[in-house]
Image 1 (tube, one colour):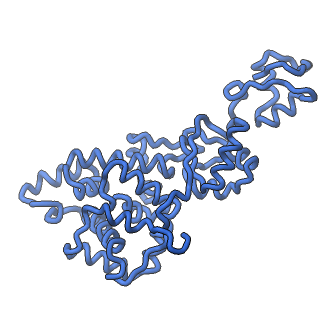
Image 2 (image 1 turned 45 degrees about the vertical axis):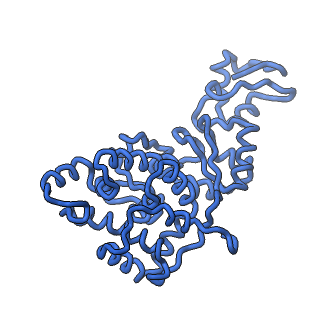
Image 3 (image 1 turned 135 degrees about the horizontal axis):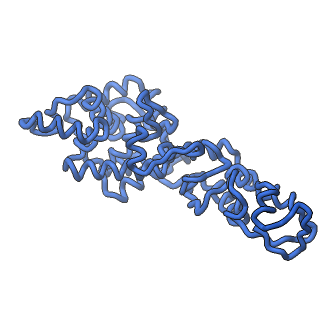
Length: 322
């Protein structure tokens, strides 16, 4: 962030509704994280590529701002985090929950690790839980333990006055309190002797809608963008040569402009996709089938078969082939 640039933290704090600085357990967790200030700052700094978009999504839905910090508890803001139960991504979805929320996994793409897809799914899920339990603390507890289990626990404790007096499994008990502890540190860093990483309150990345699957490896080469950068901002992509399933590409502003220009100039069919699915080409003087196939990353025999051509066919300028 540039010097004197507005920080995202005051914006986040202004919309906090759940954290209570007088709740002893919340203060205890805040003090616990404050004992390891370098580790705490590392976790929040890891949020930089994602946090602005998460805060925007939470605000659009008028949800408490503390929810934007939930990935700090779930994954340490590491999109590659994986639990022993095979929960993946910033929001730590197990396969079954991911599928139920439309986060599908293929050989080439895991939507649970995708910033945009997983954030929208997590917020959908939390809103549904809030509608069921009418309390954000309970919704957060259900996110951890499951709504059916929480319902059973609530029925078994009819005298519990509120979330704080419930007897919950230890992991769930700590899950919500840890989030509130982190939120309290973000709200009152000086009181606990910690500093927050400099994350600007501005859009440092762009979202590019992918209207069709593309070969992002070839598109990146055309745009002069490092493949490692694409992987860093789009951790759900396991194969850059086929973006099938991915709806939105995330890139820093400058690279996003170059990628948009590249995608507008050429279609970049994904690996393994026959030419007939993606492009109609008008033959130019000097073209050969081999050159066309190489340019569009398809096989000559696929072009021949789809266009009813033989190996000996002569293609003339002006002919349209698929």
